[in-house]
Structure formats: structure tokens, C-alpha cells
Length: 551
Image (cartoon, rainbow, N blue to C red; front, side, top):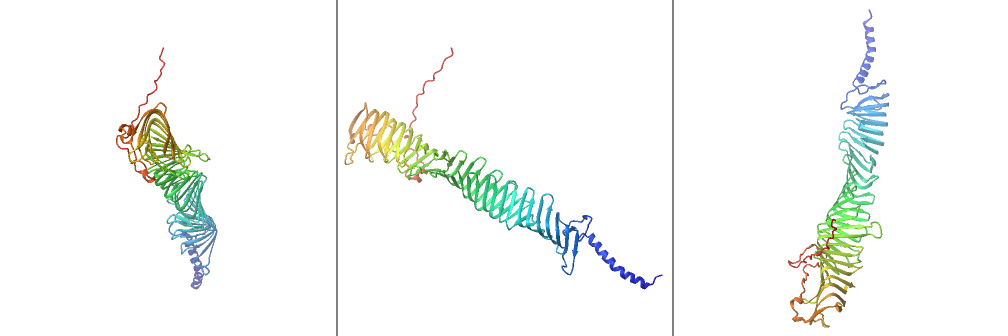
């Protein structure tokens, strides 16, 4: 039997070894410092970071009491996140680590984050990736040099320049953030979103990769083919090419420009709509269309406006033609050439103003190439002290003044001599020619009636000349009748005071000074003719329809 003293000595030698072995066994079984050259160990996933594998493990409590140095196929696991790297420093007490070399963080099969180095804090679930960072989430890939990823709130942000790729869209900025749950991203400073079909440059951009809507804030530009949009607040869909623009945005298209409090544009259809304080200017910068609402088709160059709609045409030199109607529709032709021209149509309550000519009608058409203004349905045209009415009136202008007037059916020219006397000419057709804004020749054909009060040298009216004829040519000079030609005519002279009333006022006479537009702002006030003074439509005789009977 061995001595008790020897037994005690053996126990004293073996006991430290058993304690060290127990400590190592505890380290393996609790999963915190497991070294498994043979493979991964099944470890529970909790709030603590789990060290899954490392080829080499080093620890020196005197150099770094809470730092475990790991190298070779290092792997960590934390709350559904798995990380692999070449080497790492694991801070077990702080529940954090720093990873180095080919760092790859994965979360399920939808998100991966790679970099050259990364610091991860388990309590905050925050990853700080640096150098050649690539974040991939579903079909979006973000490239940057410095990125922080907050797993708790599910968003990543970069602050040293970044580039987001999604299909054909490439988005770059100095600073940005991306939410992995809502797929919403925000980019700030020097933001640029490019695509083969468009380009956006802005100061602040919000982009949702699910619905493809982009929101821009601050000074922004959207470029697409021949289009350029200036805005400070807009929404743009990168998939449907639809734009919603606010804050007095401006849209340029082939030189044309449209501005409004709010604009809606569809690239696929080429349709643009603008609301409130709208202004459309054509490519030649000689026509402007304004109103409360405007519509524009970039494929046809057609624009429409209503709600205090007003068209301004500068093509006749310094004198501007203003046209108003309930609805104005303008069509541009030969866009992109030196022969571009426009046709403006206004219908219902149409009114026009220029310093030398004013007009009122139910509807009108203005042709800029022909410089022709056509008026329909109870039209009236004024020039100085003259008034012209008829079923249809066509006014032609030269560079600065009125050139001629053509009146079809029930034509009547009235010239005010004074507050009592009016020169009048009526007929079926009338053509008046002007020179330097003054009438030089008036030609009337068919059922012509004339009531004329010639002025004496002292501008006194002494008598009246009444004439009935089939044709009439009146030659004017210095606003006075110089001579008159009327073949086969019959007429009478009357002392002015003794003129019969039926000859003093021809049939259909009316002086519409209360309707005449006085200035451009007066165009918006519609004043109808007094009852009974409207033109009565004449029934035209139709040509007989010839038919070939069956034999």
C-alpha cells in the first residue's frame, strides 16, 4: 500500500491539468472560442456573436485582455448573419469583432456585403465596412469605399461617394442611404441618375426600387432625347417615363418651352399637361400660349389651352397680336426647319387685339405663314374708326400693319364720321386694301348699297350720297374718299339734315363700340351683341342632285 504522502503529491501534480482540460472543454461546449480544425460546430444563435471556425487562434491576456486573434477561414454567426474573412480580432466581452481580408457578410439569400475590412458590433447590430465595399440586395448593387450597415433598422448609408446599379439605372452621389426593407434610397450632393433613355442631375434624390418612382429636390435637371426639364421638386418614374413636376417647373422640347405650377409628362405618349399659370412658348420664340390649363403633344407639336387662355404672336414685328377664346389650340408645322409656321384655332367667345386691328367672333383661325386671321359666326373687325361685319371675315397682315380684309356674305363696312353720321357700304362680298394702316381701296360686289357723308374742307357734313349698284370701287386718300366707281348705279343726294331714315341707316346697321376690345387685358371680358343685332344666316340654294334613272 502506497504512502498517503505519495498520493497527495500525485494529486497535486494532476489537479492543475484536470482544471485546464475542464476549462478548454467548457470553452468548446459553450461555443465562444471553439477551434474546430475538422469543420463547423453546431452552435445556438442568440444575442451573442458566435465564433464558428478559425484555423488558428491566439490569445494573450497580458497584451490584449479582451482580444482573440483569429486567422484562416474565420467565420462568425450572429442573428441570421454569417461572416467570413481571412483574419479577425474577436472581442468577446464587447460582443464585437474586426474582420480583415476578403470580408463577406451574408444574410439569407438576398443580401451580401463585401469589403476589405469591417468592424461589427453585435449589441447595436452595426457593421462598418471599409475599402472596396459592395452591397448587393436582390437586383440592386451598391459600390462605395465606406459604408455603415445598420441591421437593426435595416438600412445602409455611405458618406464618401457611392454608385447604385439597378438594371439599366446607374445612380451616383457623394452621400446616400438604402433601406433593405422598404427598398427606398436617398442620395444627396452631386446626384446623377443615368439610363440609356434619360439622365437626372439633382441635389437630393429619393428612389424606390420597387415602384421605380424617383423624387428630386433642389435645383434639378432631367434630360431625355430632345427633352430637358428644369425643376426644384419632381417625381419621375424610371420604368414608365412619367414625370410629375411642381414648383414652376420648366419643360423644353425641341426648342419649345412649357411652364406651370404643376406639369405632368409621359415620355411614351409624348403628352404633357400643365396646370395653373401655364405658359407655352414655341420653338421660334415668336408665339406664347398661356392659360390655367395647357396640353401639349410633342410628336405632333400641337398645344391646347383653356381657362383665361391667351395667345401672343410676335411674328409681325414689334406689334403683338393677342388672341383669346374659351379654348385655344395651336399646331406647329415643319418643326426644326427655317420654314416652321403655326396654325392657331380659337373657339367660342374669341377676341383678338392689336394696336391697329381688333376683332370679335364666335371662333377664329390664325395662320402665321399666311399672316391670315379668319373669323367665323357673327364676326366683327375694327380698324381705327372703321367697323366691318359679315358672315366670314379674313384679315391679312404684313410685317407691321393690316394689309387687307376679305368679307364673305352680308358684308358691311361702317366708318364713323362723327357722333351722328356714319358712312356705310353693304354687299355680298367686300375686299378692303390698306397701306400704312390706312384704307386705300374698297371693292364691293353684289347688291351694293352706299350711304356716304362726304366731309367738306372744314370737316363739316353738308349732304349725303345714297347709291345702289352691282359693283363698287372706292378709292381713299388721307382718310377721305378720293373717287368712286360704280357702273350702272342709281342714287340720290340729300341735304344731311333731310336724309330719309331708311337711307341714313342701311339695313343691318349697328355700331358695336361697346363690344370692341380696348386693350389686351380687355380680351377676357366677353360682351355679346345686343338682342336683334345678330346676323341672320342666309339660306344658300343647293345645286340640284342629278341621278341616272334605271332603265
